[in-house]
Image (cartoon, rainbow, N blue to C red; front, side, top):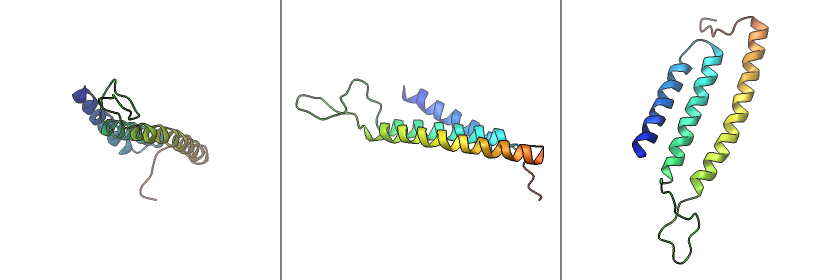
Length: 107
């Protein structure tokens, strides 16, 4: 399970970096989204992958799962969704204003 999760994090990171290096605005937005998904999976995996364990410690439990990474990932999902919406609106405004979504680094 851990190798599958590590491979997914690696693929999402590689795809996100590749898309961020493009010279168009919409691939950059998709790359940032992929990077945020990779970070969310990394934070989630940092809380130990332990199925079947309780999130709250009580007598008789063999172990527990830390609920903090799950709360952090849930918060990060909401924030990344909001930031993606803002970036899409900025990109649409730039496209409508300039007629093209190409990022020109020489100006």
